[in-house]
Image (cartoon, rainbow, N blue to C red):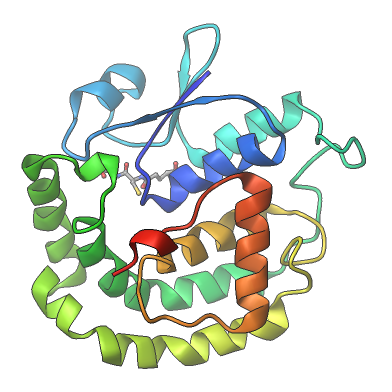
Length: 222
Ligand SMILES: N[C@@H](CCC(=O)N[C@@H](CS)C(=O)NCC(=O)O)C(=O)O
């Protein structure tokens, strides 16, 4: 199987998580951000993640990919069958939604400055900058200049997450869709240098990175 992704994309991380958790081999193919042809040929639109299955058919939508793999493969330790069986709490999706405006301004200008394969060309970087500056309503340079105040704004949100983390193993104690919502977003924040996660958030983040075999952006953070 082949998974078409962008490294910065939280939906692609959702899809990658299930392969890591279930230790199912998959080939990762990073698509250039301005490559319209590849995803369109597979699923009829410019959107990732896309899973090309062994039978050659392609499937979009991150949670569809997660469920497809989850239903077909056991957990490696054999104890649990599904990585979606744990309890869900609306607070997790609400928390994620609440940090989105801050997260976008912090991370988007950084994605084009760190070495990610989807931004390997100038045209891929310009494509992203053009679209996302419109989305955040300010230029990437302005957003970068706001780093200190955005970090100050983010801190109470990170503190509010601490009591929501039941265990470093899974946000609600047992793996559920909430982990597929939370981990990708926290991983995105690791591209921001100078951001300090509270210890409980940090422990969750690193545990999930190890368990899903998905590296964080810490080593290239700026
Ligand atoms: N509902 C989709 C959303 C996927 C999505 O929004 N992917 C973004 C990347 S983060 C995308 O491909 N956007 C089109 C673009 O970048 O041009 C899913 O969960 O798979």
